[in-house]
Amino acid sequence: MPLLNTIATPYAEALLQVTEAREETDTVAQQVRDLLAIWDATPQLREAMTSPVLEPEAKKAALMALFGEQISPSLQNLLKLLADRQRTPVLDSVLRRFLELYRQSRDITLARVTSATPLSEEQQSQLNARVRAIAGSKAVEFDLAVDPSLIGGFVVSMGSQVIDASLSGQVRRLGLALAKVS
Image (cartoon, rainbow, N blue to C red; front, side, top):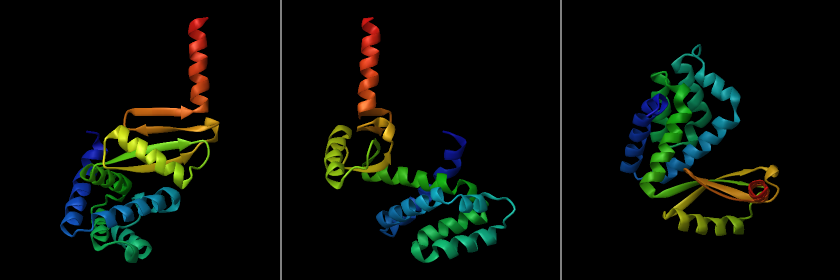
């Protein structure tokens, strides 16, 4: 297990246990997704929370001012604990590990979908049914991205399994087939 997971896993497991006991795991999982979106989109927040210069009390105050009313007490307590123990540099790893554990406990497959253009709700619904059947899980959670270089179609990644239904992938496979013939 990588060092970062060794640090993140106990915090993530504790948060999952607390939220399960309080029957708020689904709500907290959504709050974690929202928090990670803000974390990923705001380099200033990441820099401040990972800075060794900023005192733990200042980090706690900033986190509570930014997210306090929008997140559950369980998640607030985790943020405060990470600040107290000077573990805010691994905050995103803890939250991502929590989501992994949450998905495992709910039999949810994470599918990273990269498409040439944004997928419509209907396309997502159809893809959801197919991915669920392939993965054999109860539900599928999508991590959607757009990459115009695919030209058309999409690529779905679920763990080590990759389904390439993109036009650029078809062109690449055709090129390889032609190279073998030559």
